[in-house]
Length: 129
Image 1: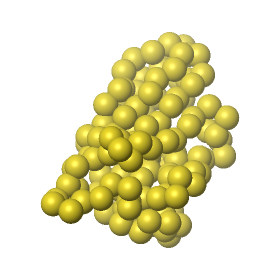
Image 2: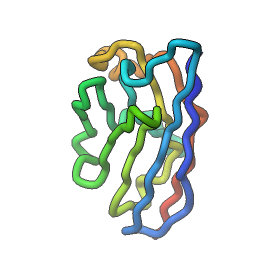
Image 3: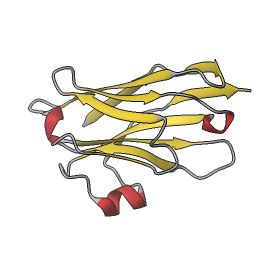
């Protein structure tokens, strides 16, 4: 089993920034650096969508509509994933989920189908205008 715990969410005004963190832990022998990590989000009344992903080589992908404002990174020494959210807009209001998958290169199919192996409970981000 892999446990993922998000933190750093909150309520902010438009234009402000937040940094989300996701602490990963797991079974004996769990090696965080060998896992694909990603962020997804789900806004009220909308389907969950992929936000960003990072593979074990540090290669990143951020959704086209968000790449100018969001940055994904990981600290393998701390078993932690981050999502920097800048210039937040009200439409960024959503619950943000951390996810982990055992395919190091980040399977495109699993990303698109949102079938990552492990998920956190989510962190709420609320942006007011």
